[in-house]
Length: 594
Image (cartoon, rainbow, N blue to C red; front, side):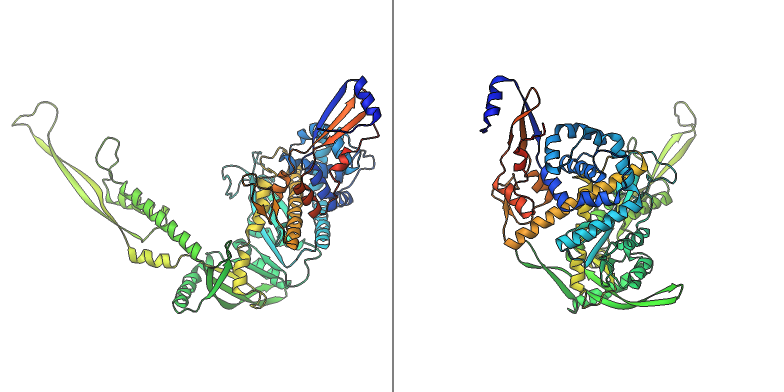
């Protein structure tokens, strides 16, 4: 390490003892600068109320600095902030140009911040302001919005009417949860609106309230809203069509759809044999076009009864077959059949200690039906069984036997499964019907063709990335807050972190695409690999091990600073993100206030 010091510093070095302080800057400066570019401090300060006696940092800067720590460390505990700020004071003050006190991040102040964020009138205004700002600054497309819900399992006490409740969960059904409903903007997956509601609520009742408050920029007709099968409820479709908006979602195989689906599949199979299905292709990673689906469409009219009278609108049902999905369903059927066969054969083991034998035919039939139903293979297996009778003669009463002793014949009956056979014709026909799904949309074929609809829905993973980042990078669970307003406020704060990651990733990728360039050095496992689609997580990791070293004398005066030099890749990232080139270098400027 080579440092150039002033004459006064050199003189001080020779006469006094020194204190060396090291701050791990890493990606914190990058995150703070990115949030400042997005106008996050100003938007939060504009909509979060400040008490007239409040001193210290504003709520906007408090939230931004806390969020920078959470994004960098993956730790949202309030108790960790005072220690963190104490060890990063120089870096934080230099980047934010704010005077920072450790007490600005006390448990009470952070709790008050979360309480303010939890209030709908503040949070909704913040989301709308950020949406308008992001769309205007980054020139984002606003044609497609995706909606979806997820659950977050917690270990909090369940109270009647509270936020934390038991409900249907794919994570851990044995634990209580909260539910998050999110609307995101395609194609970057930017969260536009988020609601944290009690964990027992059904998804279909959360769509309309979320869509109603998306605000300006999403009121123009022709917006396409994409969701899963829960969004296909007639009430939601009627709401969107009544506002001249479009929808696309799969139909659940229930109700009238369950009755119509067999006929739709039969028509699709007949059309496939006649070569009348529309094929959907996409380009894979090798640049080759592969068949991903084929299908046909049916036109129908939807009707709802409203206060003003009945209302109708045209709708298209897209009946689609996916070869990959069909293959997966076929393999699943084979797996279930194999498991059912094994369990059925195990129902009647050979005689032995602890081996249960069926002595009544009705009990065996009931056990077989239970296995078939559990593995969903009713009617696909034929089971043969036989009645076996064993007779044994024994003397009546106790004592030795003799020729004159009375005897009796004991008859033992058991039922034994002799053969398990498959109905191959039925299984073959069922496999031919695998892989079919019905989608519904009110968009015209000119606006959304069958191929476009299939490919559009297959990008549903974009909204799932929001949930993945909340649960992995931001570690929303476990939650280290107990009050319901703080749970909601923390959830909304973490979604702001997802916004930051999403905008950063989008800006960098767009810059690389514009220049037809790629970034090296983001994959330590493969140093020669270059990418034009870097993730925000890898970008932040590329700034690890950047440290700021401060040298002070015993009086507390700074006599020197040294910052880890940035690599060419790090400098290129800052440039493409539109951040100042000297963002990190300015940290080496001596603090003249000390």
